[in-house]
Image 1: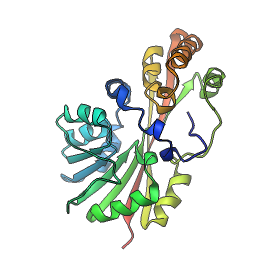
Image 2 (image 1 turned 90 degrees about the vertical axis):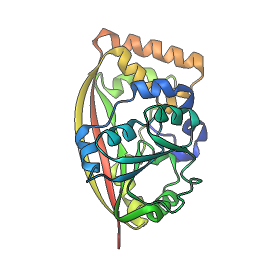
Image 3 (image 1 turned 60 degrees about the horizontal axis):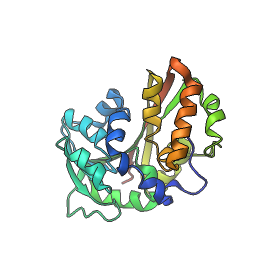
Length: 249
């Protein structure tokens, strides 16, 4: 689904919509490709995971040997992450206090679009250790059979389906990051996956533009999508993107 015309980080209703569905979010959001996680790990890095949600990326990084501190503004999401053994501090990144701590990697996994970018990028510079890196990561899952255009014949009755530039693309995010004093390189990690109809719907109904629908609308949308997709499920492509950023010195 696409973002509204306003910068998505200013839409606080969407930004704060996840906590009420924290359990479903953790169960149904896909994990990140293992080669992507491996790219982020070098030695035993100290990682700051910003907007960590339920700790999906944090848990993968910790399992690979990283020392992870998660920062998450929603206490309900943070509680799920903490139950995995992840150290979590409940705060927005803007209000979070580093207290002199520095990190080898600062990670925004599926979360950079929820912060004011220039402010966040400047704060990251203050907490990166020497030779530290910033990583902006997104799973970008698109249905291929049926296509998004096929599904939009249903979605168009419930939400705006126009395609607009989004920050989770190289062309959009790179100039923003470079203007804040970073060098940027992009890495892609392609995965293909088949979802059952119910599994696909479980996933997309953890997206903020679904969560913020009126409950009756949400139920009707799910019913109509289920009818549209039928029993064949959904083939998807995940062109996962990692934007690796190093400060210009």
